[in-house]
Length: 318
Image 1 (cartoon, rainbow, N blue to C red):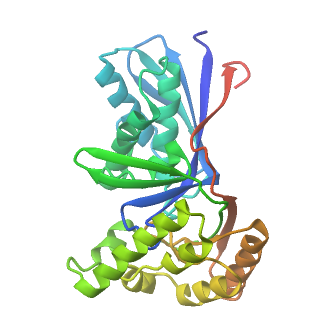
Image 2 (image 1 turned 60 degrees about the vertical axis):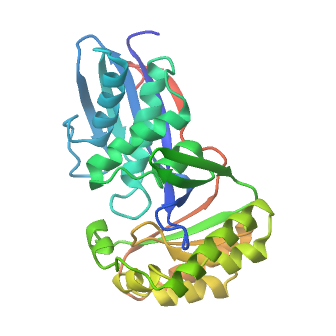
C-alpha cells in the first residue's frame, strides 16, 4: 500500500436497549454515522490530524476514542507502526444514538483494513469496546456490536464476550426523533432501581423472548406485542420532555413499537414499511412542533451491513 493512502471507514448510528432488551440488544441504522480515515505514518505513535463535524472533541490520541482503539490494536499486535487518523463526525454527540460507538467502530475497522485484516469483525467488537470504556467508563457492546455487524445483535454475556448477530430477518424501518436537550448517561443510569419486582422481571423476559421469536419467525404482530419495557422506561422517560405524547403519536400512526434509544434523549419507533415510518416520523415531529425544543429527525432502514469501507484515497485528493 502507498504510504500516502487513506483508508476511509463509515460506521452508523445505533439504537441500544430496544425497549425490553436493556443492555443486551441493539440494532444498526443506515444513517447518520461517523467516518474515520487512517493511513500509515513514518514515525511510531498515533496522531489525530483532524476532528470535524462537532466542537469540543480533543485530538489527543490518548483521550479521543479513535486513538484509544487504534493503540490497543497496535499493542496487541506488538507493532510500533505509526498511524495518522482523522475523525469526521456526522452524528450528534450525547444523542443516545451511539456516537462514541460509531467513532470507535469506524476506527477499529479502518485500522484493521490498513494493517491487513489481522482481526475478524467479531474480534473488532472487543477493540471498539475500549473506545466505549474511554467515553463512558464502561466497556459495553450493545452499540458497537451492531455498528460493526449490522442488523440486530444480542449481547448474551460479557464473561467471555458472547455476541450473537441476528441479522435483519424482516424488513424494518426506524424513525428517530432527537430532542436537542442535554441528558447525561450518568443521570439516566443513576435513577434506575437496583432491584426489580419479580412480576415485572417475568414480563420483561417474556417480551425479550417474544421479540427474538417475532424477528426470527417474521411475525410483526408478535414483534409489536413484545416491544415494551416494563422496568426501565417508566423511570427514564420522565427525563425526556413529551416522551409519553410522542410514543402515543407514533403508535397511533402505525408504529410496531416506540421507546428510548440508549440512554436518550432520542426516541425511536420501528415500523414494517417505509411509508408507515414516514407517517410515524411526521407524527412524532408534530408533538414537538410548538414545544420550543429543537429536534432532528432521521428515518432509516435497519441495514444488514454495519461498518463499511467507503474508499481508499491518496493524500493529495483527501
